[in-house]
Image (cartoon, rainbow, N blue to C red):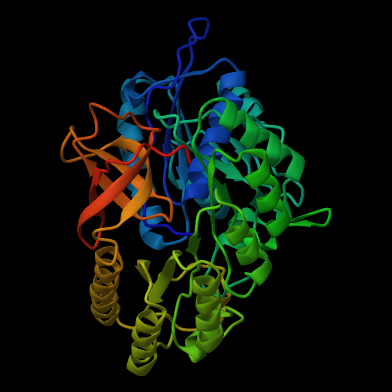
Length: 463
């Protein structure tokens, strides 16, 4: 799953005058973590909590954490120092650590971070009310047991975005792939799929509330299987149930993506042609050490299939540089694959050893840091070049766009995404079209990061 956009949440949600308890949630890491924070918010709302944008007003602070790289964990340790100082001024403040870092470092968090009152792993959020009461009774509280069954299918998430435009639906949890570099199977457990009926109901509820776009989430959505209903069948049922809603998904594992999914995407006009297909490396020897289960040539055939079934598809990927033993020749193979695949977007990372993983046990993290940095710079430069080429091809075309939120640089503009997933800034649209509007937009400029367009003369599209 792409990790390029860490999100921190502390926005006002709703006010419950009957409650004297306020919660503040910060979210780090991937989209799955953000969806989990919405589950946590739903659980707390049922307990009578309201929410605040200011941690200094909160009675309960929760950090939903990421453990996929060392840098992600370092951020949390630094943030805990701030909350330590805040708690010195407000002794009643409760501080909890949730998520993957909680699962991985539960003992260390309690022993080395005195500010932390409670620790809950990704499968323990139902227990938060009891854990909070335990802390109120004067004890530290920890619950980090992984589950083979928990999907939170019956928990109603509290949507955290201030704009009722896009929403996440978690369709499965955990991962069985055991990539040698990855900590996720150890922090999120084994794969289990949520019932397709509960997913359908959540999608219909969102559509009735006016949401225009849904993103289905899973560590490997192509492994979805609920009583024989596979991912392609789930997509078809959702597309038919909410035909007015754009449907996206993340993330796919290359070895599991089947043509059946691509055929289904091509058959329904509201299944958006955006596919995030992490390759991690273009070298067969590195892929073998990573335990990815495919070769570079096999991966490129998957990309060819995507573009054959979905000619307008946007294909993004993840690249890790500096994995154990990576040679210059292996690195060059990665650059060659990037060119051959002509990715529209690339999320790029330096390898960060995670204790407990197969790679940490089997291989030495032996690529020097300066070499990792240089290789990352090379990947970034090529990724920007490829993205710019992808965007420039759309100049002069009309694209269906869903407006999402005000643009950052100019309040008169609105940020959105094309149907195929390109980021776009629509100029001079804020006074006429609110977030949630579907428009036809003429693309007039392009950078490596975004498209820039104007509202076309054509009437707005409904989907």
